[in-house]
Length: 568
Image (tube, rainbow, N blue to C red; front, side, top):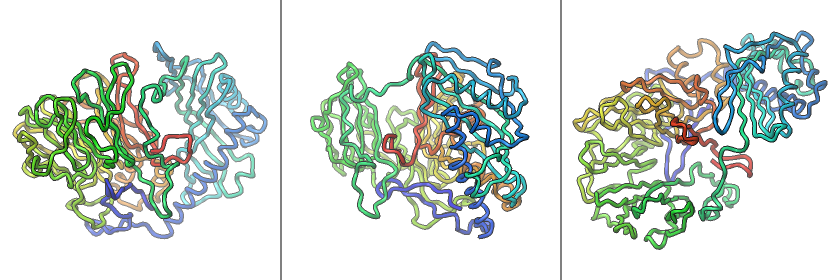
């Protein structure tokens, strides 16, 4: 079994091999060939046969409103429960209306006729459908090892499109379900869906899409950026998982946001015109168009009131908001060859100078296990104290922020416990994320995070979801329904409870941590409904509707499999 991360030799390198390594305390986590085959078969039948071959047929019947064909998939004694659609918890906004169905809403116990009638009503709300899908969430044999008997699991029925009165609309309903048996012959058979009981649902409706792509209207050019579908890779080349980033700044202090865009094809620097449009001033400000480093940072590093930039291994000094000039190695004391994943700025000691924090420095080329790796350091964080005039001192060890030694991709600074001092949390690919609390004397103490291991974290942001004045981290974790199903189908007792709990955390998806106000957190990602977003990389937060509460955003996708969709 492989639950993997990702690497890019030019930027970020994973510190972990496949899960076949012996780990601390001598426990071998590799499963037997027999158990591996069983898990492969379960996922083949539950994920591929049912999820990829059978459920799409049901979705097609619903899309085409072929109700007789839909009924043919149900057993004679098919049992179901559906929500009374009028009994809903409704949330009204100026721009949209949302409806929620859950434990407090009325359900009707029914059979084939009642279930089809409920689905018919929902389908009838749509004039056109962009999405009509039925997806497997969980699926396992009712009795471990018996494929030719009943299977139990859960599924998600989704609709999205245009309503009959011209509004944009979506519906998602979650069900516990049962299948009589699953074999390779199931796609050619009928009468195998034995039960489907609704557990929750949600819908939204608005007059138009909530966001609009205005890139072409702003003067920002995208043709020069790497497109993995258009780029001609040589045979054997690996498509990069990360092609660059966007860094906002106000380099000339005119009060308007400018943009530094890094890309493996080269960088762009856009100056704001002050009217929502931009002009490319890359050459005019002294930057190199064909600088292909993806890691960058913006901050006033010499306290002259103008933001400087770091791009790759070069420090650029801002000259009075007019241009940037590259500093020689003798003009700064940063060893930027150690920077692998991300750089952040913070004034951790309150001296008025911006310090630098880097994550992902490689410490070894040896393969390391995913879990039980205490004492095995694959990478490290770096804290550089700003001494003034681009001179920095590595204070990582004395500050105590080197981290657990697992590969990290991002870091965020925020006052976690309300003492007025910036604390730091990282997103680590393998293992529990680093969390260090500022002691106020130049040192940090390790903070406590929920869980034993964490998910495969790739990005992190902090917002205040409940406006209580304390930051709540939202963490992007790699997630797939297949991985969650595989862990759920493992034979009971295969691992001890602690190891199994860690493996469950591998596949729980994104995590939202609600701050208790004292620097400790409660994990609410699943209960808040923000965990199941796919293979997430970064997260963001912004109050998009102006109601005083932040919305959260999670871009997902390792590499797209559809040319019409964003790549990564």
